[in-house]
Image (cartoon, rainbow, N blue to C red; front, side):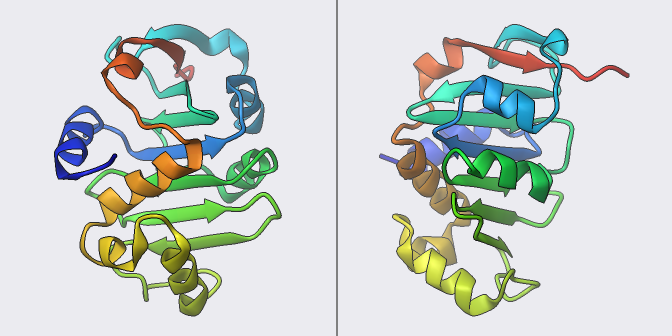
Length: 178
């Protein structure tokens, strides 16, 4: 269950992440293909295992992508990943707008700034508000603690939350050539 204590713990570990994406029903290979990443630039890596541009790990019924080098995945990438099942992406760095994107398997997409939903909502504010109302986090959490709302929604999407065991597990690290 996501609460304030978990949220603080999670934020301590992910403070350097620029974007987080939770993809239901995907595998690591699906993610690599959607991002057009060659397996040759990947290596087994732990969450706290070193310098990497992206970490891809299995979680529950899907995959989480922790992006340390790119602002956020492109709409094309999210649309490709969503063909397997819904995905949720959030800009996580405090220095950029808190853009949250949700892509449904049928191609529908919702995109908004979680800290200011009326700033360029896509497709429109009514659609964003309707989607928010249907999430497990509910409107009040989105209104007051959007980061917690993202984590609650992601946990429901993948039917699992990151924990200490996940942190210690081996995942796929990606280091882009310079």
